[in-house]
Amino acid sequence: MADTETVLANRQDGFLRITLNRPDRLNAFNEAMHHDLRELLADARTDRDIRAVLLTGAGRGFCAGQDLSDRDMRDGGEAPDLGHTIETLYNPLIRQIRSLAKPVVCAVNGVAAGAGANIAFACDIVLAGHSAKFIQAFSRIGLVPDSGGSWLLPRLIGEARAKALTLTGEPLPAQTAADWGLIWKAVPDADLMSDASALAARLAAGATTGLGLTKQLIQDAADQSLDAHLDAERDAQRQAGRTADYREGVAAFLEKRPTRFSGS
Ligand code: T3D
Image 1 (cartoon, rainbow, N blue to C red):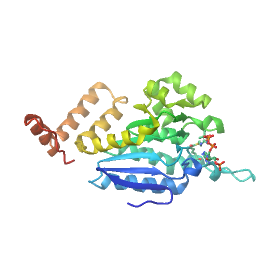
Image 2 (tube, protein in one colour):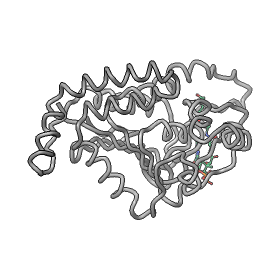
Image 3 (cartoon, rainbow, N blue to C red):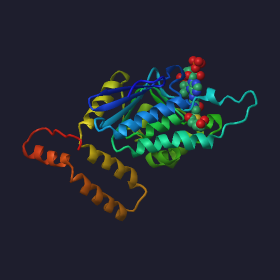
């Protein structure tokens, strides 16, 4: 799990910090960054010692979405098949984040535009520095929201706000995003990394199976009936109840001491 040209990888306190690292382009995505990020997330899935992920960006931006210099058609060249890039690059990334059975914290350190904004929203807990802003930049260049944005936004903030943001491409300041419930918290810029790291470390010290199942339940809730969801909760609770972490949680409570979850 090493740094690459496009992403930095650091293990600390039980979590993996991934830093998008193309600061000259506000960490816009080229194909290499997609592959490098996906590889790290795949490692996070299988490595039992990684119990949470923290995603952030290097420099003054979080991520400006697709690198548009890879989409230059000014010489009259053929337009790329964007359906293909969505299918092969952006959609698998969103699926990977949402299906990772471990918490993913996102620390939005600056502007998050286009797919960059929607990748942040796909994470489980999003903190943003007060100077950060979110831009559904797609309409500014004739595109439509992707990376799950047109699915997630109306669910999180309602159709009226989702339509206004996506149709106008107006920037949304971090504090407003928090006030609207689009992200968890806006914090002073100077506190962002320490707050996000403390949160990731706390989640990494949690009951990993239970947290992964909780993530899945919350994500699935909006799309199934209460009846089906009650069954899903039953199955998840059965699974959580068979973990060593559940035994430890109950023992710690009865012994009036802090938990020492092993993640198993
Ligand atoms: O293509 C497909 O496969 C389909 C998938 C699409 C997914 C998408 O994400 S589509 C949306 C693509 N993103 C955008 O349209 C956003 C473009 N960027 C901006 O609008 C602005 O840069 C920001 C509002 C994000 C920030 O503005 P500002 O004024 O703070 O910074 P800046 O000066 O515009 O950018 C700084 C540098 O980063 C600059 O380079 P320079 O002039 O210093 O050499 C700029 O060109 C570069 N940069 C920023 N965003 C991108 C980028 N370079 C390439 N691609 C970018 N997306």
